[in-house]
Every structure is written in structure tokens, then in C-alpha cells.
Length: 165
Image (tube, rainbow, N blue to C red):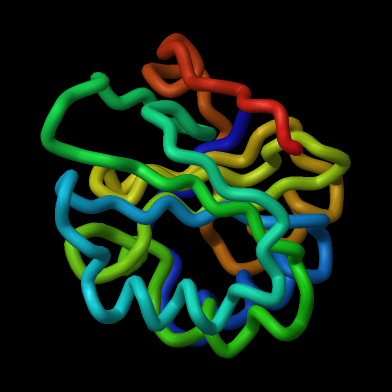
């Protein structure tokens, strides 16, 4: 497991999104809202932009990299989308990885390959991880200077290895 050492921003973020879309089958965004309320305007906009790419969505308290306590106040909708070039403009509507965070935007952008999560982020924790990366993944993240091998907390913590679709 590899830890992404800092927020991926600006030009590096653009390179990352292009790389991730080219090397993934689908991606995940989690839309959060208070129960009995609607999604915020920007979240609705993102959902609308990505609707043609949606593979599946479900209301849940667990997704790759995160476990939330079930409660009566919040709902979390995990939406899976095909990783296609049509997603590029939506994913580049922000300038950095950790901008994908509640309350204005969906959170926890993750990418899947062969039905397994290979890149996960937990935006509110400012945490991103590579799971079982390929040599190409390691080379890419090393090139842009955002990778550290993890032998500490992140490896010892229970981190959900959620199956894909």
C-alpha cells in the first residue's frame, strides 16, 4: 500500500485525472446530505453532468476507504461511474483532489480497475492511498512526486477493500 504524501493540485491534478481515467474501469463519488433535505446545488450539477456514465448507485454507510456510523441525520449515496473521457470536464471542475468534500461537492473520489479499488481518497482526512499499484502507477506517482510507501498507521488501520460492481 502506498500513501499519497500531499494534496494533488493544479497541473498535477489534471495529469492525475487523465492517468486515472485512462487506467480505470470506473470511479466513485459519494454524495452526502442531511436526511429529508436535497443535495446542494453543485452536487446536483455534478450528478446531472455524470448521469450518462452512471453504472450504479446505492445509499450506504460504507465505501472504499470509509465507514460511517449509521444515524438518523445523514445519508450517503455512493455513485459509480464509467471511467470515460466524458467525465473529464466534471472531474476537472475542481483544482485539487481534496476539494472533493462535503458540503458543496461529493466526496472521496476513488478509482477502480478490474473491479477492485486501486486509488482511494478520504477527503475530510486529507488522505489518499494506492492499493496494490502496478509498476505504471508507481512510476506515474513517483514522477509527479506524490508517493510514499506506507509501513505505519495507514497499513495497520482497517481500511475497507470494497469490491467493485
